[in-house]
Image (tube, rainbow, N blue to C red; front, side, top):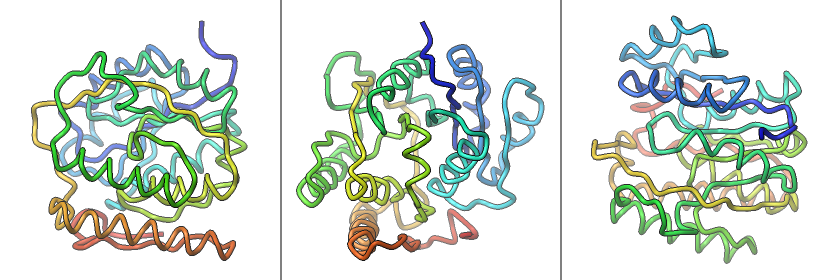
Length: 255
């Protein structure tokens, strides 16, 4: 039985021509309104999306970053007054049939976040060791600094109450955006729950882009985002964007 909340399911997409149709075919089975934010794809993704009549579609003229694509989805959900927003990645690592579970969990929380580490059941593939190590470290630091009890700081499979979205003011355009999100959620006192989701990693190589493929530089970038967000929240202001190393190689403008 589908949740009673009127919700939007949004997918940030960048150069996912090989996955986008198969993923969307599944997502539309489990979600009513579906939004795809194409973040300036250059591989034919835009042409595939333009042929579909079962989704809403927003395109960034140029690549702006993962966080910027999610911010567009936040703004869309608020503009059209959805009760909740679900975000799901388009790389085949999330199971669309679990969308309803996240929305249901969000009925009693402000943010329901998927966690790949709450349960060892149903795993398909293993997280690359370096990525897992960085996730564990950053998650631990967030918990220690913010008084949270997260197990997975970076899972993109989430549900947000519309009222919670209206209180957030995320500005970070890159992959560090979830850290800014958690800082603001903690300072706002938002109710957070985690929902177990399978750990699914595909065989294909995935890249963060530019210098962020270097784990040390990626960790430095995450720390800068976290430090700036905590400092800004303490002052009661909105965070400023922090450009990662080689930012121009994976997003072209910040607005």
